[in-house]
Amino acid sequence: MIWGSWENFLAMGGYASYVWGSYLVTLALLIAEIVLLALRRRGAIEGVRSRNAASQGKR
Amino acid sequence: MNAGINWFKYSSPQTFFPLAGKLVLCFGVLSAIACAAGLYLGFFVAPTDAQQGEAYRIIFIHVPAAWMSMFLYVVMAFWAGWGLAFNTRLSGMMASAIAPTGALFTFVALWTGSLWGKPTWGTWWVWDARLTSELILLFLYFGFMALQAAIDDARRADKAGAVLALVGVVNVPIIYFSVKWWNTLHQGASVSLTKSPTMAATMLTGMAVMAFGFWFYSIAASFARARCIMLERERASDWAAGYAKGSA
Image 1 (cartoon, helix red, strand yellow):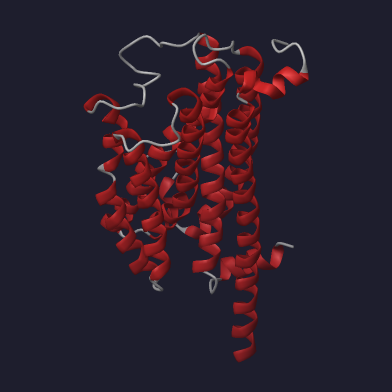
Image 2 (spheres, helix red, strand yellow; image 1 turned 120 degrees about the horizontal axis):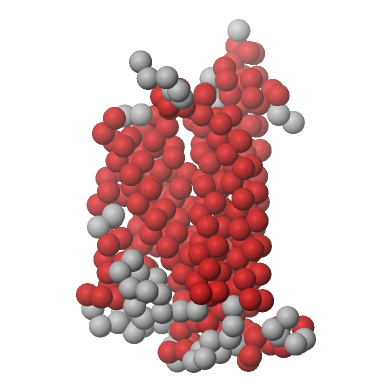
């Protein structure tokens, strides 16, 4: 390990807020997109079901 | 007739839907592996930069995100233009599916660039050619999504969006060459086809592996969103009803 200790790793040579600020925001955005996609998929399936139920009711 | 795969088979949502599902899984796994490997190289193998210390480690997401922001716009404009020219159903859906992921990577490039600029340049933001043209790219993505959202009829939304996407594609070479054409605070290209790289091999490898990770992620996210759009637009079809019935 090139850092010596976890404290050094987290400190990022004094640039911790810049480096971790970049990585954590990126990670949060990617997770948010995945969650939104999962919710949208569920909503889309629900939309197909309700549409189907409505058209079968008419028949 | 040519033997082999019949590509036109996959140009209808009905047949593309299950294929896209497999691709989402496949590229999602590949992306996780590449990102894990890239982060390991970036944080535990690549050495400290002689000039910038550890602040340079932002490069492992900044540069791949900036590449993806431009690349995704070109792919989006390609599908939008294809749909406009040949009126194929799936093309417009693909263009709409790519836009939010493209906007995400554009924002990431701007955000990480700002956090990198502060310690190295002494400022969060300057109105120089590279930064301004990348900001315009973000607004082009937002404009594309807002325009499509404002039009109820999906076909008309695709056409209006396609015109915007195609006009905006002129911005991509401007971003790419901005550091050459103008005197900018932003440094020149880190990687170029004509010159040998100006950075350590391990740094370059880490960046390349992260770029593959983001690329695979973009493919997975775009196809996942395309599947949602297919279900939304074709909710009255038999294939969609069959899928909704089978999925929990």
